[in-house]
Image 1 (cartoon, rainbow, N blue to C red):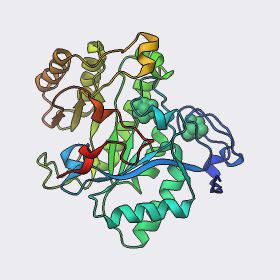
Image 2 (cartoon, rainbow, N blue to C red; image 1 turned 135 degrees about the vertical axis):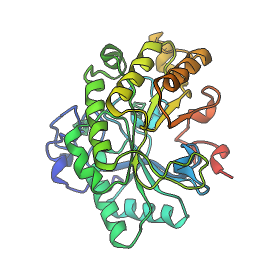
Image 3 (cartoon, helix red, strand yellow; image 1 turned 120 degrees about the vertical axis):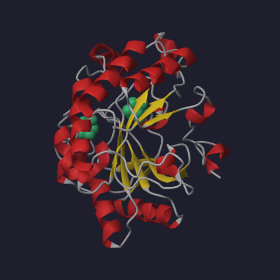
Length: 315
Ligand code: SF4
Ligand code: SF4
C-alpha cells in the first residue's frame, strides 16, 4: 500500500526545478521527474564508492531517491531514475531511516538527486539537527537546478556536489531534453560556491572528511571530447583554479545507448586521459580522477539488497 503523502505547498503546483511542470503532486500527479508527493527511495546505505573526502573510513550515508528531473537517457541508475524501482516512505519512516544511518556511524548524509523531494528532505534534516545530529548533509545533484532554490538549500545543506554534465547545449538537448542545461547548471553552481565556497577541508587521503563547500563532478562521455574540454574551460573561467573537481571515467553504456546507437561504448581511456591533462594544463589544483573505466561496480542493481555488491562494504 502506498503511504500517505506529506502535503507540502511546493508540491501543489510543482515548480521545484527548471522543468516547471506545474502539476499538483499532492493530488498524486507526477511531473517530468516521475515523482508524486509520496517519497520513493531505492536505498539507504553507507556508500564507499564516492570520493575519499566524502567516504572517510565509515562511508557516506547515501540515500538514493526514486525519480530525477534531469532524465538522461543513458542513466546508469535508470532503474530508480526512470523505472519506478524503490519503496514508498512516509515522512516519519524517512526520518527514522536517516537516523538509523547516522547510528551506523557514517561520515555524512548524502542525498542523491534530491531536488524533487526538497521539502521532505528539509523537514527531515531540520528534525535531525533539532536532535543534536551534527554530521554534514550533502546535496548530491545533477546540476539541473533552479539557482533561486539554492539559498534555501544552503541553509540546511553543508556540502554541494553538483554535476556539470554538459557544456554543449545540443548534447544536453539530445541526452536530457533541455538545451538550457549548461547555463542553468553554471548559475546553480555559482550560487552554491557563493553560499558555501569550495570543498574543505581538502584532504584526498580520506583521513579528514569534508565538512562544507562545493565539489563539481564531470562524467566524461564516450566520444564527447569537446563537451568535456569546454566544460572544464567554463568551470575554470567562472571559478578559477581552486575549484575542486572530480573527473569521472565510469560511464557504462546502458541498453538505451545501444537502441539509440549513441554513447554505446565505455569512455575511451585515451580521451579520458586527455581531459585530465587539460584540467592540469588549465591550472586546476584540486582534482579527483578515477582509475580504470566503467565496470559492473558502476551499474548498480537496485532490485537487490546490496545494489553495489559486496565491493561496497569498505575497509
Ligand atoms: S520537481 Fe518534478 S514535478 Fe516538479 S517541476 Fe521538477 S520535474 Fe516537474
Ligand atoms: S542526472 Fe544522474 S540520476 Fe538523473 S537521469 Fe541523469 S544520470 Fe541519471
